Length: 450
Image (cartoon, rainbow, N blue to C red):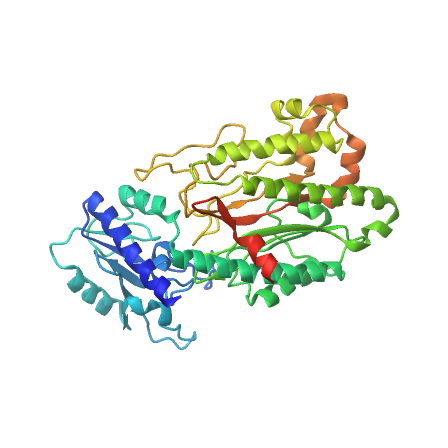
C-alpha cells in the first residue's frame, strides 16, 4: 500500500494545484473541524474530520480536532494540534502510510498558527476549507472560506478514485462481507436485531464508532423502513426476514453493502409458508435483476438511464409475480413501480457513504437535478472510468405508499401484498468500480473469496 499511497499523494497534489490555480489561489488551509456539544450538555458526538483533510492523510480519524493541512502546490503539510489532555488518550500521530507528508505537532493553537503563517508567506492568496462558520475563530487565515469555485472542482474530482483509494475500498468490502456473513448466520440461528448487529461488528473488527454509517438491521416488517434505526433486543415471533445494510471502513474509505434473507424456518410456519415461498422467490429475482443491472455498467453510460432500466425490470417482476395485473408497460407508465421502490438506484461512494458530486456534471459546479418522478436519485452524472458507486434496487411493502395503489382499483393483488407485508421488503446492494472494459463488482468479489 505504501507505493500506492505515494502515487495517491502525487496525484492529489496535482489535482489540488490545478484546481487552486484555476481559481486564483496559491494555497489552501484545510481545517479538520471541531466537535460540538449536544444542546445543554457537556458532551457531543464522535469527532468526524473534514473529508477534504482525510483524503490527504488517508485515515478515517486523523487524531485531534483543529488539525490543519496546508496544500500549496506540494504534498500537503499536516499540522497536528496535540494539547496536553489528561481526560482522553493521546491520539496517534499519522505514521506509516503518511510518510509522504510532513507532519508537525503543536501543543498550542497559537504556536501552530504562527508556524503555518510562516509556511504560507505574507503575499500568498490563501483560502480556507473548513466545516466551521466563516466567522469562527478557527478560520484564522486570510481570504475566503469554502470558495464555491474551488470546492466544486475538488468535489467533481473526488469521484475518480486513485489506485490507493480503490485498494482501500476493496479492503473495506472484504471487512464488510465478513460482517455480513456473521450477521446472516446469527439471523439463521434465531438472533435479535441487536445480536445480529453485534455479530456484524465483531466479525468486521469494528465498533459502533468505526462503521461508516449506522447499521440498518431490520427484521420482518421493519425492513419496510428504508433507514430503520433501532436494534431491537427482543426476538419477534415468528422470524421471517432480515434486511441488513451495513459497511466497513479502510483508511477512511467506505463500503456500503445490503443483503436480504428469509429465515430457514419460514417453511414450517403454517400461514406464512406460502407467502414465505413467494418472498424467497422475490429475493432470488431481485438478486438476478441487480446482477443484470451491474453487468450493464460501463463508462459513458447515463446513470439515470440505468435507474430507468431498473424500474422497467421491476415492472416486469410485478407483472410476473402477479402482484399487479397489468402489463409491465402499463405498470411502468402509471408510475406504480415508484410505490414499491421510492429511492434511487445508488450513489457515489468513497470517503463519505453518500459521496459528494453525484449530481454535478462538470468541474464548474453545474448540477443535473433528478427528474420529478425520481426525486431521491443521488446520482445523475454520466458514468466514467474509476468511479465507485452503489447499485441497490429495492422492492418494499410500505404501508403509507401502498395506500396510493387504491387509485388503481382491481389490478392490485391485495391478498398477496397483505401476505407479504410482514416480510417488510428487499434490497440488494453492491459496490461497483467502473473499469476500462466494464466494471468490477467489489462486493461480489469479496463474497466469492471469503
